[in-house]
Image (cartoon, rainbow over all chains, first blue to last red; front, side):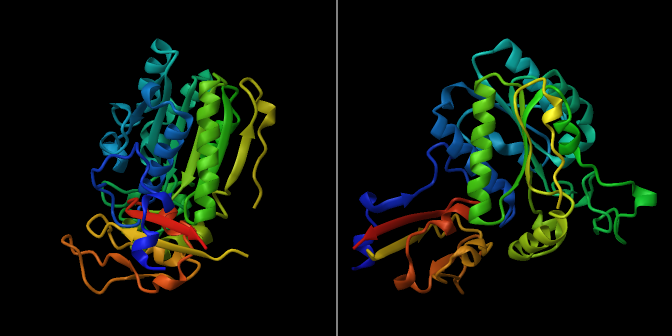
Length: 266
Length: 74
């Protein structure tokens, strides 16, 4: 069979999701953000909620997320996405609201906003992309940077005495009564990506069912600032990030059930 | 068992040559082209088209969603 016979619309098994715009993403080659955007577009399309989904984009690498997914967006000040999303969710109870944040945005400057939004149990989804570094500004140390990890501001590696300890924000959030579904996923292999898509889908379903805040952490790579190739960065992530940020579901229940939190063990 | 043949189409201009699809392919179909696109990236291409089974792993891992996958059962 000739290639031209196979390449035919009736044989199509995978194409770009309809919700992704034709704008070329500004992300570096191999960046995990692109995969997470694609999963979001697929999930919103599958659930058929394009008309009633409102995203809140952060400050960070994903600041231009509104250019890439064809839904309604609102840009928030640095770290304040959960506060803006609270307002949107409360004034538009029929809409599905989600925030898309990085680790510098969510775990550093926006810690107060995210903790209180999750504790109040706002009906929204939080997508938290954790790559352990400030990507957009040139690879400075973030709260989630691992001990010993080399960044622009910790050239000899992060030292606990000088820089403190890495922050497991997802574990903190899983203990709050307002959250319903808290999970940690990754997007380094096709299997992990399919699993992550299921988790995002479940989180959106929980928001539609008004179960409280759903929180999906995606452990991801920043190959440009880690100074590795995309393939090597994925290997480094599995080797070094996963022992500390263990993937899996931390909480899967309804609102007001903090006892359902189960710590993940490696 | 029915034989399956697949084919992938890479959008050469969208591809940023990250190489994630090359590693994700279980059949070693994809490779990075020696030539570059207009933005200077070594875009992916089917170096071994007969081996493709249309599993769509490459398209799943592609961060820029520049791969379309087709599959035929014989």
